[in-house]
Length: 162
Image (tube, rainbow, N blue to C red; front, side, top):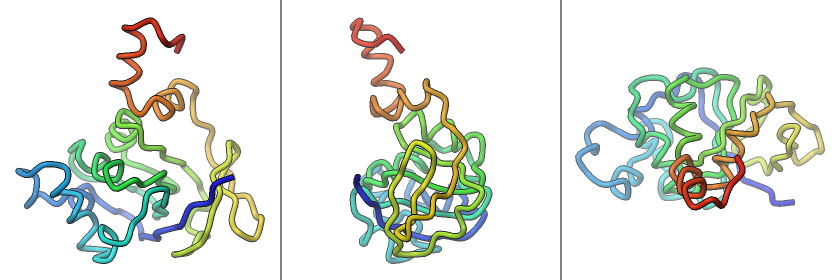
């Protein structure tokens, strides 16, 4: 199984930290260069495909800007693990193919930890499993397809039963 490196954040990370308003007139590639610069200046340059974000409660609060989830997809973030998410961010993330794991014990994970994402939760490097809320099949189908638009394309071409 594939392990992922943890990038740890605090609580109440808002959409302006993820996709700063100053850069919204630009494309996703430019916005991504400034992702989380206010709270983790090392993030945009240091994150690697397959890494995960771990945060405190209320991840993604703020505006409904889709780019807040889009930059994480663009940067290759595999998942965001937090005790709770903003409803708008939650839906935008799945629509764009970004996995969100609602995990009450997420804050036990530390920056730089290696974790494995399992159907039942997140397994730490020491073997401890942190349980996450189950994700409905229709949302997992979106993740596997790479987002809602891909699900709709597959349906229109008769390639999916979801």
